Figure 1: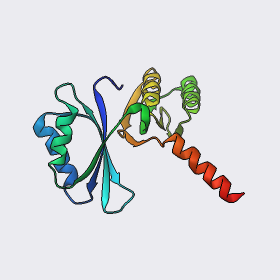
Figure 2 (figure 1 turned 180 degrees about the vertical axis):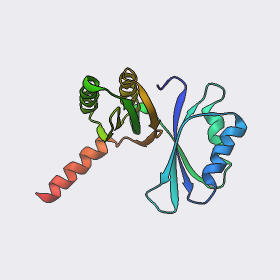
Figure 3 (figure 1 turned 120 degrees about the vertical axis):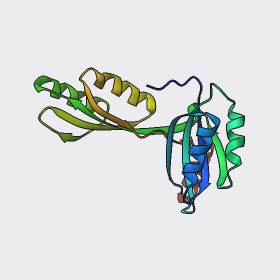
Length: 179
C-alpha cells in the first residue's frame, strides 16, 4: 500500500549509457535516501532513458536529492511531477489461491477492476491489473482476502498531464483548418 505523505515523483532524463542506473541507485544508497519505487525505460529519443523515481523524503529535502542527481554527468533533466498534475500508471501481477466458489468471486473482482486473467490452475489463478497506484492498492487489498501466493508490482511510471488550454487551442486550430 502506498503512503503518499512524504513521497515525491521525479522524472529523470538520462543519457542511455551502460551503468547509469547503477550510478543513480548507488547515489541513493550512499546518501541513505529511501526509494519507494523505481522504473526505467528508453525515452522518446533513443539516446536517452527516462527513470521514474518515487522517493521518500522524510529524512532530507527534495532540493538536496536533485542537487545530488545533477552531479551525475549522464543526467540531462529532472522534473518533479505533482501527483495532481501528472498521469501515473503501474502494473500488478498476482497469483491468488482459489477454490470452487471463490474462483468466480476472484474472476468477478478482476472484471470489476478491468484486469486480466493470465493463467488458471487447479488451485490458483494469475491476474494482472494496470492503473493508477491507488487503484492497484485497492485491488491488492481485496485480493488479500483470498490468499495471495505471489505478487509483483512494477513501480510507477508517470508523465505530466497535458495542458488543457493548449489541447483546446490545438483542437480549435485543427477544426478550423479542416473546415
